[in-house]
Length: 262
Length: 256
Image (spheres, rainbow over the protein chains, first blue to last red):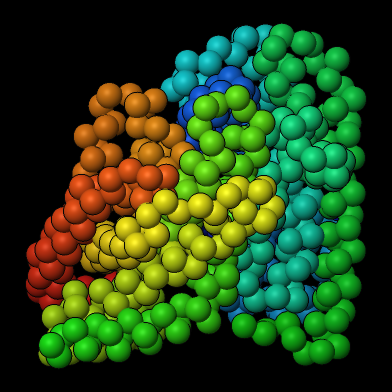
């Protein structure tokens, strides 16, 4: 139990710090703190140009959806980075239990994703002059945490795919693109074709974005509990699927000797 | 003449390499399509007088810019990783002439982006593919590609001292999308942004492409776009001289 806890905490933190070996402030600040602000501004202005929705709509949608960048890329890098450093086989040959090994690496990613979304939300609100009620700030903090958890679940699936494909950056960008279209971040779900809004129900962010918009409109946390529960469920399903895929692909990689394929 | 041949041969080689790169050849083409799709959906759902053709052309040029901004910033970085940077710098040709075909190649992929986005808009969203002045449209696209290549060259040589050059390239993707009038009219932006927009060739390239497609007078915009593109190349040559002199003095070309 203690060993598993050490692998979960120490392994996760070490892995995340290793990510910062290349993810220096020169990369972190433009990518994680400035780019989301420009994404928010871009879509807020597109919304103004198209006469569709208010700045608040785009602020909340894009601030939350941008958490997918740290969540998807960091999780893919969990495999791709280890492969690049030639440490992937050393990790997977170890007898370490896989649940703390993989989920321990997810925890810092969830926290970072939540931080990026919260920062974008607050700074974007200041720039666009969007008023978020003081009473909504703590519940919004909870929502961004749940959204980051949910997307990190999808990130685990992405990490598993990185065991089989080389171009995890392209795959992460593609998933990001689907989330941008489907989750209601920029296009109201009722304006999407029916099959798209149905598919959106099974994607990270869809329920969190809706909950966040309702909170910003003054609705209480209890009234969005159902949406938050759905978001947690989506994240948990992706997380379990990702874990299952990681285990399966790990076995396939051993069988096909494709672990170090680069 | 030999310089032109050099650029043409290098451009061909670079273009072939880019098209075989999953990130530049596939990822950079797919990625803007997602943004284009959002733009189509937003404009279709909104009640703006701006048409889907407006959005289609804007999204198409967004794609052109993506292919340049994301990868041009790291063009020199790539040579550094491959271990060829020192060889290229030591070559008898001026280094900016060596690098220009790489950024032109990236900008050329932008034509593929443009076509893909227009076709995507046409077949998925029913946006008509009507071009009022086809010849001027082709000229506007070629002029925009050349100007994008020039701006990409300026990025590539300016970021050579940064290990994280690719981030700076990425960093300029959204701001240019926003302030160059691709999907947002300049009139909607704050007044202080407009002089910055005017100094950027993508603003004029976008305007030239839109004018030629929708029936206007694209030539002044095209001339401004090409003029700025030449200005970027001239500036890039000066920056290259400075950067290489500095790198030779400090022995810091490889940044290892």
